[in-house]
Length: 310
Image 1 (cartoon, rainbow, N blue to C red):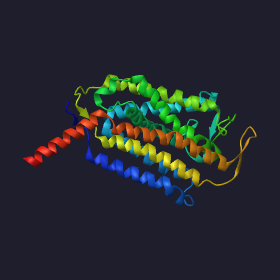
Image 2: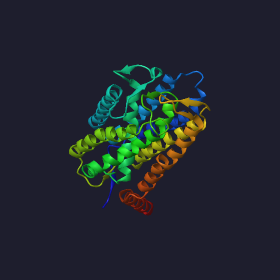
Image 3: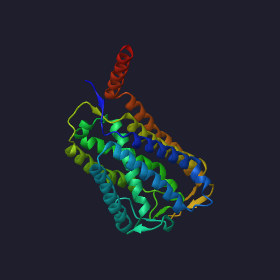
């Protein structure tokens, strides 16, 4: 079959996506720490969320239509904020916890800046999952509907698994009943799998019904997948760098447990290496082996050879 790149592709969006990705990487690996003396935690978090949100919008507009992007953002916003509030009020599904006042203005009990993470990292994880299950063509939106949602839930929850102990250590939030994962309860991670599936599955189902593209030949530009995978890798790299620069102190949690900060930083670096970094590498290998893109490259090479002969 002869494959062609979809007309939805926009070179300007690709350019903005690359610029945003590079700026985010610089910010995560050195920039944030360099500006720490002049920017308090709220403003540092604000810069990070602005970069992630911009990347999400640019990447999503290159792959989806505006309505599809809007549904994705709305589901992430409503579901995540709902369950975060029920956890603060009733302890379900993450366990009882409270965000630090330093995180800024709130919507009910949740800081406004908590929501962009669900949308931005949620979309990046969604794109990574689609590569892992080889669901890269537009016409494949109606395949592997619930399977893609499950894989995406694990891909996204890995980020939380690697980062929540560090966030808890640095008092971004506090659990009423700290748990065994360096102070974070098991219910938090089970809750993440539940909550992410609760917005990924409706999104996947909506897109399967929404797919109006019947041309089996159309492919999104491969650069969109590269950008999504590289952002996932950049977030992992930023976390590892942050852990390597963490201060040494002893933290005491609400249940009386004490932890040396170096133990948590080192443990989360290893955890990130064997989860997020592994998934990033696996997705890159999977993308390079997707048959449709290999066929398109061979087709493009053949056309170039013909043009040279002509």
